[in-house]
Length: 328
Length: 222
Image 1 (tube, each protein chain N blue to C red):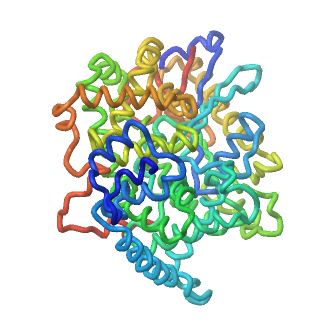
Image 2 (image 1 turned 180 degrees about the vertical axis):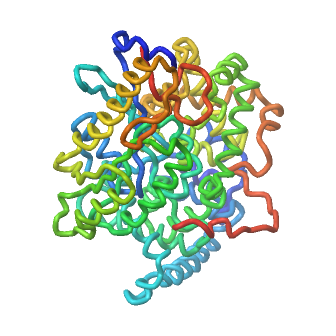
């Protein structure tokens, strides 16, 4: 029996979801199992669902996806001519999918069908969530999901689940990003006071230099395989829903000597952080992040305002038309 | 910054220049071509902001152009516009094969003027001239808009390199020439702050963002 089956009862229910999360947090998921396990981590499948229920759900969701997709597929050229938002979104998605992970063999070469799938899923998503639409960075988030799932409809629904949590990162007012950057500055304050003081006097407390890390969950900072490993750890929400912020702290702490020793100003720090891409050791960072999270304990959790992504947004009743002014 | 009196000792100038324009008009590739003579057909979209510093030699003076490359999507402007602070030059870029990107130029200029000094030396850049068969914006249209807005103008191709260096150099040379005229004027008149210069251009040394100390980000004199 493989280690995954050992977590399931005879009808396919996950018997001990917490044990599963812990196992993934410390050990990751084997490549072949990701296709199944990620659906649970992302919340597309419920842990207490059976094999039969999941099979049924998949077929229902497949038809639902086809209906959503047909909404834009049925737009005629004449209609598109009078539908600026559609043309703009489609154009932006077309421009982005052809520059998303093309160095990975899954997406390389001319007329790659997987690139076309990225396009179709993102455009369908922009109809499913018309208020949010398409925003740069989303293709980065979808790419590993499609790579793992292979299937178009399953990838779409897993992406939908992910965006339930990360959607606010892409809000026009950047509220989701601001609350995370704010929480990050609070965490650094309690976990590394000298670094906090340094960043304060260097006028760097807006933490904009961590913007890319957070917006696309370190997608551009690690190689592809490592990104998948990191994401599944984050998705377990074991220890904290906001482990990604502790990952930020862990990386900053690792380079604190250099940052402070070289008296980096905002510009220099931004350049330094951007250029760390591809040079961060994931295993060390995760180990540090775990220790920091445990060390911060409840004080750490208290630094993070309710509703900070990836927590679900707080229902305000003002489900806004905040994208009204956006061109996309 | 009162030290412009000794021009001889100013070996180093640092000019902050921003690259703005719609998504996928080729901003990052213009920078890659200019700074490293490279071009990436499938280069990733820029998330947030990046910058590169490129040394240039103008009239025997070493000048560092710090070029800021920003994400193009409107959604990110709340974040990216923060980086316009202290800029003394701008390349406002559109794609000659997509009219929509040319139609956005007005908005980008507004954005630039809202978040930086009105007198940022600005060049309008029509990129991707290699796409001759797909051209949607004529050279004359670009030229006319640039004249109406008082901008420099150039058409470039980051892919085949044409005019890329020239576009950046135009901006840097103009900034440098405004600066040297200002230095000369201030030497002649023994004044510390002369804001207005010929040519209708004005340079405020620190940018207009309320930085009060002399260690301005935008003009550095080491």
